[in-house]
Image (tube, rainbow, N blue to C red; front, top):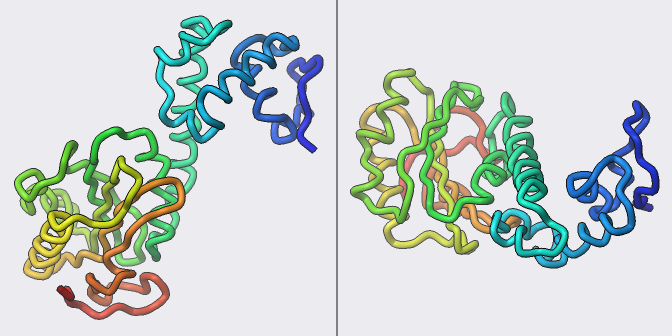
Length: 238
């Protein structure tokens, strides 16, 4: 059972995972000994956000409108949300991206608060370990924004063994648009020509949804290593 805070002071045996959402937030609202008033404020903040998942979308102005939330408190809350997002993203560094699910789990925290489409390339070594990340474009995707020259420049420079493209749909619906398909086909064909295979293109939607061109059968990568559990054959299926 999650616990409320009564008189929580800094201690080595503090078990934060046992605390309720309200109690954890109360630490940011007040001191290490939050009163019932601080817990009430924390509860109102969570309610106004529509639950803790809503903190990905809440902003400074929204927080400051709430009774009991000062600008300093709003800053602490937003900083904590951003810090947590970065922790989730970096803790998976070094893991193999050997399936679309791994790609989603790794990159969802990075894209969760983005309000516009962001297109990234992930350069991989021969074991599907991350070599380098690079943002290619920001804004509504078009073939002119995602140019193969920019998408593969770093991959060529670093002699990447393969590449995965990742972008988000802020609407939460990961289904690819016709432009997404055209861009993917174009990038795949370029990858074939320069011998840097496009292993997958993953579109990230809401907290539990994503679309993988490899999983869908539209995109089949060169046999660089196991991806998605099977050794994939090269080719783009229209």
